[in-house]
Length: 459
Image 1 (cartoon, helix red, strand yellow):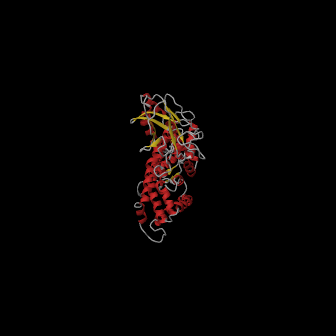
Image 2: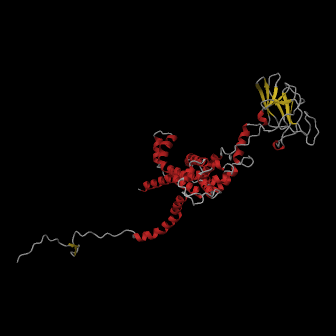
Image 3: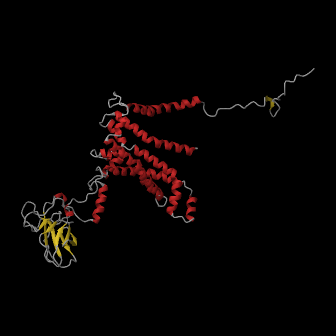
């Protein structure tokens, strides 16, 4: 018999015990890790459905609605978008948003970095962080109410102007008496000059008391510490009295100090010879003044114009000029604690050996901070900065609460204008939708930047 040779035979694969298991080149069976696609879809479907209802549908509807007029019946195409860039009020709004985006994130990030560095070097750092972070527990609406009171014009109500007037009055003792003036007529010893100051008609010298009667002082500006005026007594120095020459209920003698008439404290008095001021004095509570150390001779006694101007009352924080910086100040107060906490966590993660090595090499603290701390902290700084940019683009509550109605056009931002045009009386949801899409376009680049950074960090 002959055997038929069909080719080389492949021996079957065997186990350790010798049992056959099949051909040796049979690939192993692959098993799926994790749930099946159907299970994943079942879990993701509710979230995707909610995301579509709350995010995708409003965006798509807003895009469509922005192409129609206020009533939603007339198609206007890109007309609403053209209005955004041609209307003067809208341009002011865009300018304000640019100011917010440039200024507020830089200030918040810088102050947060300063606080984070300081908390590493001071005692009671935890208490300091708690105090700085505390505004984050306050809603933006409540913060707006707080700063609306802080920025009140009256120093008796507004904290900001109370501080400014206190500092000003520390270095300037002049008391303003607006609308006060000398008596008219030839009998008055003083008169108003062309510059608004009050000067004596006759030269004065030591030993001759100077009488300066003033009328037109309103009761509201009369200082509470004003004492009854006293007729000056002759002496070796040039002296006199400035008083309110008016007796309540009538009576009294014009140009003479009567018993019930009050002095005018806090007035600046100058002794002038020629065109130069030889000496300066300030009236006491009874209106008296006295020049010490003046050379002998005749002088013209003058009350400068500043005495008859309104007393310094601080700044108009809620006026059209300062309203945007004032609101940015409130924003910084709220978010500085947030930036400090994130940056402090970043500082805690920096390797200390790198800092100590730089110090041992002779680097100063500023060089260590600028060339080592800041570069190592740059990812956290970028997170804080981008987050603040997004928050500034969405700012609404602070502007709506702090800015009075009369100056809201000067303080307006895109988010507030979007609400005002759509629901705050404008009733133009076409233009409001265009503003919403414009705001979305402004925010998208920074959101994409954050997403890409998160992906780089996770790879």
